[in-house]
Every structure is written in structure tokens, then in C-alpha cells.
Length: 235
Image 1 (cartoon, rainbow, N blue to C red):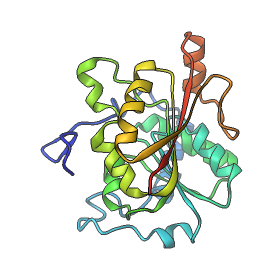
Image 2: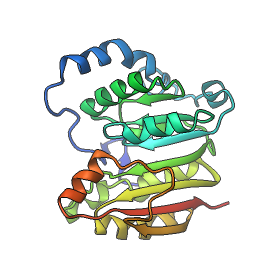
Image 3: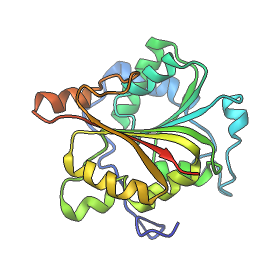
């Protein structure tokens, strides 16, 4: 890692807090009963001190591998898992409340083609083999609105270079956001990391398999409008 956002002496996070409101009893139950079973092993330094690459073929059974960075409440991740049983998904989310919400949705949907990493996506990038991802989703990421915090956004070189390394040539990268300045930075930074812009649309131009998340609904209620950007990994 060469970018300042990923120096081991100062790992700036693209996410903020990791705990929110007090968990409901059912959510505590999901965490106690399901989290260990659904957590992707071999990602953290404690589980994989040598940082050996994950065996993606064994993980996916040869299926295409998709990644969602920051799955929020899990609506989109579970929706994709249910709609595409022929693929395998990894969801990353450090926010404990979001992880608990996702576990409840997995139970309700009966989805069995996904695992989660309840932590920093950079730990996952450390152990993902090169050119293993077929698709990646970044839906309503933390906007870090203050100018001095823009370097914490996911769409910066320190993250995008790692993502580009992990994605296959021709793999699709989708970004959904309601923040115009995040769109600006996405359009500036993502192509420089080795992606081509395929499409840029607004409300009404959603992807055909899109499901509106609670974050999107909150944005709409507050008068902010979605932007949907699709990129293709070069090569």
C-alpha cells in the first residue's frame, strides 16, 4: 500500500462510528447465533497472520464473486443474493447495527450464497487474490462532507487501487450516492484507477435489478436525489 490513506501508521477509515442505537433482543440473538457462521474466515490478521490469499475457488464453488462495500442495513446485499443464486457475495460493513440488521434479513430470506466481513474492507483487500471479483457495489457511502475529510472517502486512490487490483478485466463497479460532490470526486478518481465510465444516470435511471435502500429513501424524504454510476474495469 502506497497511498497515505493506507499507511499502517495511520489507517484513515472511510467509515465513521461502529456502534449506534442499542440493539434489540432479536438483533443480539442474531449476532450471537449467526455471526460466526457467516463471517468470512482468514481475513483478519488474527485469523491469517501471514496474510495468505483466500482460496476463492473453494469459497465460491466456482461461482462469480461479487462484493458490496458498506452494505448498510443489508437490503441490497440480501436482494442480490436472492435474485442471483448462481453467484456468491461478500458483504463488508464495520457498523455493528448494520451487521445485526443484515443477519435478520438473511434469516428471513434463507440466503446461503453470501458471507460477511464485519470490519474494514482493506483487511479483505489484503487477502483477496488479484482479478477475482466480477462485480462490486458501493451504495450510499459515508459522504464525509467536510473538505478536509474528502480523503477519507472510498473513492480515493488508496482504496480504488486496491479495488482495481481485485477486479477482473471487464468487471463492473456500481456507485449510488445522493451527494453531488461525491459524484464529482467519483468521476475524477475512479477512471484514474483503471475504470471506464459506462453510464451516469439520475432518479428513474436505476439499474434493472436495483432495490431502493433505507438510505436512499431517507435521502429522497430530505430532498436529495440519487445518482447511479456504472464503471467497467479496464483490461
